[in-house]
Image (cartoon, rainbow, N blue to C red; front, side):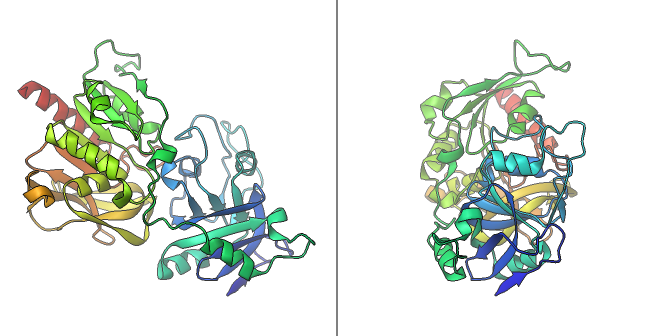
Length: 405
């Protein structure tokens, strides 16, 4: 099935870009950003703001992102808001790109930034129809083809069947171990800050943060609370972690299938065995679930955006939260359960947070260990800040543990 929508805003009468889905559906539009070919898992993001943070989130590695908000790019691109040093999305799909940027902070247009970083995109697509298709069929592999990649050696348009074959040859997200591809190569330190924003000589706590695709705002949120953060590569060992003399260990967000992260899961079990306070976000939540012995599974179309309602079962408070995940933890929703790993050696666990849209596990809390995690993003710079208290909870956990030692 082919969608040709030349009357849509941002679409030319002669489409020069094609989006091909794994199930054969195609959408034609205009090239946006770089020209060429890109392949990946296609997902949709429901946020109406924060596109720059989305683009630079390493969790989107190897994914083509569809923005459900129709008008994208109106504030351009600045040098202050990136969550990492580069754009990580594999491709970008928008309906109506802004023709100019309008912000005193803007340094470039979004189109220019995508082109400069080699990110292939497409505009003029009926993103509402595309999103409904993905909600009904589930996320899948896809490809964007534009420029010379759309034509054969003789200048003729490549047949859709040939483009579809390229999509089918792309790797699937299930079974993908990707944290090592986005993690820092070398450790670095983010200094603790005092109330006036200046570095503290004596931090309130020290955290070893394992970078599985960490966003820049995460160590910043800890630093603002007087915590010194040692950011470590995904390949770090327990000796590397202990060398920082941590009061707590943090596992970040990141891309890929948590079932494939065998090294990170074993590292986390080493942390739990030593009863070092632990906090995990997103991928870190999934890895805590697997370390405790629960399974994980792939969601039909995932949660991505800044408007997801989650209830904190401890307080009964409903938080509007930012999400970016396609996998979830399979744990009992009601009451306490004994963690299944190794005959229950990690004791009791409860599901602490639940998504009110679909009852997906959004948080875990160990009752016999100093460990907890959430599936969503309390650090979200472009999203709501309802969940910022979780960083305070982590600091309280470390402080309590230090006081009891």
